[in-house]
Length: 174
Image (cartoon, rainbow, N blue to C red; front, side, top):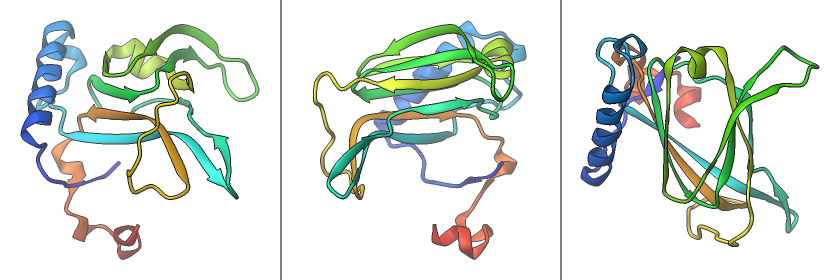
């Protein structure tokens, strides 16, 4: 995997990330955190409804997946609450077994890591509620109504972080 080099976190976010890193170092065994581990990247996901021809199609979910970045992951959610599940998957065409699940409320911090949650199980966002009617306006999204935003902080080894100019032109244009 590769990651585009970005700007440093703004001071308020850097303080939050430092707090998450401190918690990870307190609660996770050294074996769960590779040498040089720090939460140096942030993936931002928008959850809500795609608007097609004036009609809203709820797309606020993420299918089963694993995060392949090494070490613990910390995420902060804003807006409507979401149901995250950790599941055992037996392969295509079979029903996944929910091992653990929790609701992530507005301003909720979730940290997960270790062999079981990162390597053995898949996780998914099963759904995002529509109870408060909260919508984030003015986010510069086209044909999308955002009900939840998630900041996911991860570690990407420095050798995988490249300046934008080192990516192929086709990727630079995206």
